[in-house]
Image (cartoon, rainbow, N blue to C red; front, side):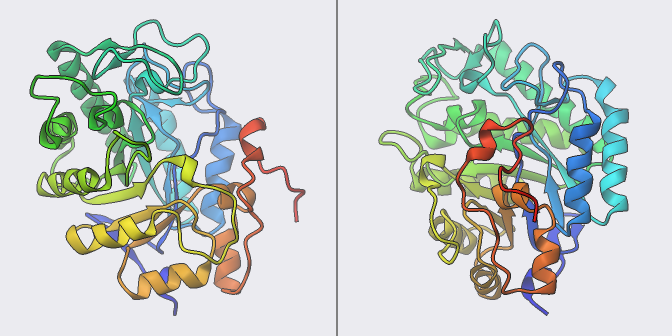
Length: 353
């Protein structure tokens, strides 16, 4: 049997295979972040399609800061019953599911943006032009409390784990970036200081959910721009988080690197993930550019990474894992054209097969 269909262990979580549905922007929640039937159906379809672990599209942790339109929220206890129903539906179909939690900050695509947006420093975001309010010590404590409360809700809803989103330019990623973090206090300067808010959020989450509850983090391999988070600093952050008790790390990176190309090559951030896997004693999930079953199987056999995250291929073919189980030589239809980004619900534009 292929290593890809062996059980995946991340902390106390057990998943049936090494395939992970990476968190995806669906834009199908209500205006205030609550679930809809259309959104729930996507997760049910993914679970039926054979994927071992679903990382749900991010849920924002404070009601007053909404990063993207119609994304899920987890900012108060009213979300717990509906998420419990979602988790139960996914479990009934044989998959595990993780809640990804986030504070967006100046990466917001909401138009108009939220009234008050916090950031590490009052520096215009190069992509959105939004200038955040520099977070005070009180603001940072509030954010840490919000992450901890969100994780508690995820556990109460039955999610198999929770993932802190510290990649893709959202707030925790901004604290890691020298371009956006010009602080001179204990949250700025050295990489240890820039990672401090994540370490403190982890500690607060552990206080609320216990040591045994699986906790992941999503990190950029680098920011992909001069002066941003480098691979060396990213490796340093990963080691700090491992020492602080993280259970698994999902490796991603700057999406400008994710260009359309053939399906036979290595994933976009494979070199970094292999290096991290050698230096970190936790499972590494590699996301971005996973198209070739043979390449993933080789990397799994080499123990280079523990699991493989996919987004666009599963938008195109939610049953892709089942297709590979039947025929490992099957070639995915997705060509990373990104035209799903412009559709309602981020659906694939290719006709159904």
